[in-house]
Structures are given as structure tokens and as C-alpha cells.
Image (cartoon, rainbow, N blue to C red; front, top):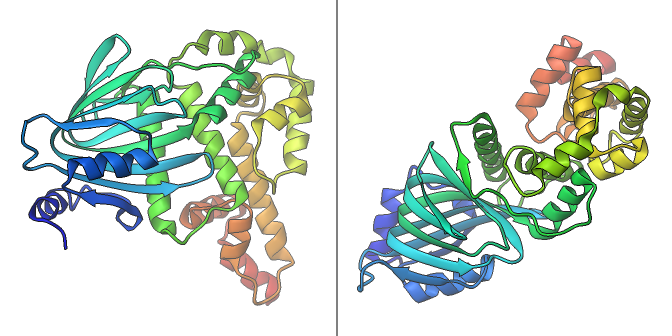
Length: 342
């Protein structure tokens, strides 16, 4: 049975709480919260601001994927959190309710909903004070981020340190916040027993890495811009990339492989697709997958599941897929199927 403090916390955040089906920790005991949440993230010191822990409560919901996870973490009362260096992962923390003060390295700043968020790097020591705060937290595997940064910058893999404050009113901040909100909605739709196809999983990894490394300032930002080169010189390489994308459209998107196939850097590819083809790599891949869906429906048997085909091709939002399909082909996928089997 939940204690009165935990029940009060659940009532207070009933509308704001996310990922409720993915509950991992619900407690009003400080030591239990530190131990259990520390297992999921990393060991840390957790202390209520007041000498007595009355009013303290903790909740952690976590939906884990391959290389990243989306989390909802909430603390009742004011608590100090001292994880030191995170070591194994990066954390993007988007405040949903309440406020927090973040000390990263030698600097400090406040975060609040729709104003400022935080990005914690694994090599920068961090301390935090949360005040009746709930946050959506994206955890990204350190090695995955550092390897992508190396591929973008043309350098050997090494530590990447981000500016810790994210301006949620800047375009890049709004874009990142929207991506986390969409990922959270996707996890809630799938539920604990759901799964992402390998294609969709890869697409999400690419989108998150792109928003992080190209949207938020970090130590390799200048090197990435320098390594990008001039997109105007790359039509042959871009054609090679487009052909590779078409030949592997039903496979998970891997920008490193795409860069190897074309012989140029990832950022140069991204700029070149925009400039020469007028679309992003993801938008071109979407168009190719829509064409693949249309072709498969054209040869479908009467008992085919449009949902299963779409899922295999990497579509996770069926409504969005149907809208894009209708815009491209002038009819819904089900209309195509009915016409083909009639």
C-alpha cells in the first residue's frame, strides 16, 4: 500500500505524470529512492533540503530502447542530487513541473518548464537541487554519442562535452523538446510489451543524435562544421548516397554506412541533400519507404495487414504515415489495397 506522501505525490502530478505503465520506483523513503534510481542511472547522493524528510517522495518511470531510454523522474519537496560524473551516458533533462538548479562544472543555472532545460555530459561533474520537480529525461549511451561525433568531425572518438544549458525558446531547443515529447508518446502507445522494429529503432537513434550534435553547442561543433566541406562540390557523391539509400530503404538508416558509401562526411551529406535534392535524408528515405509500401500493397494478398507491412518498413505513427501516403498517392493505403484485390 502506498504511504500518504506517495499518494499525495501521485495526486499532485496525476495530470503531468508520464510513462505510468513503465513504473520502476515509487517511494517516500530517501535511501530506497537513491538506491533504486541509482541502479537505473548511476550511484548518487540524494538528500532532502530539510533535515527531516517529511513530504519527500520519488517516482521514476523508464522506457528503455537500444542505446537510449526515455524517463519520467519526479521528486516531492526540495532535494539535492549529487551524481558526480555520469561516466556512461549523457542526460537531456526537460523540466515538466517545478524548478531545479543545475551546477555543471564551475557554472550554474536554473531550469524551468518551457524556458530552460539541461544537458549533462558524462565527464563534467554535476550537482542539482530539484524543487517539487518532475522532468522528462533522455538517456543516451556515451559510446554511441562519441562515435557519431567522431564520424561527423573526422576525428578519433573521444570525450564530448556539451554546453549544459538548453534554451527551450531557441529553434534547436524547441526541436529537441518536440522530439522527446514524440518519443514519450510513442513509448506510451507501444506500452511495456511493445517493440520497435530495427528500422524504426535506427531512425530514432539517428534523429536523436542529429538533434543533439547539430543542435546543441559542444566541444566538437567547430570541427564538425569544418569537416562538412562545401556541399556544392558533391553531386556525384550525393548520387552515390541516394542510390545506396534506395538499395537499402528497408534497412535501418545508418548515416556512417551512408557516408562510407558516398565517400564524404555525414554533415556534408546532410547539407548536400538539402541543397541539391531539396529534402533531408530522412525525407527522401520516407518517400522511398512510401513507394515501397505502395508496391507491396499492389501485390498484396487479401488477408495482408497494412499495419504489419508499415511496421516492417519503419513506420511507427500510422496516422502520420497514412497522411503522407495520401499526399503522395492521392488515396489511403487501405484504398490501394481494396483496389488491388478487388
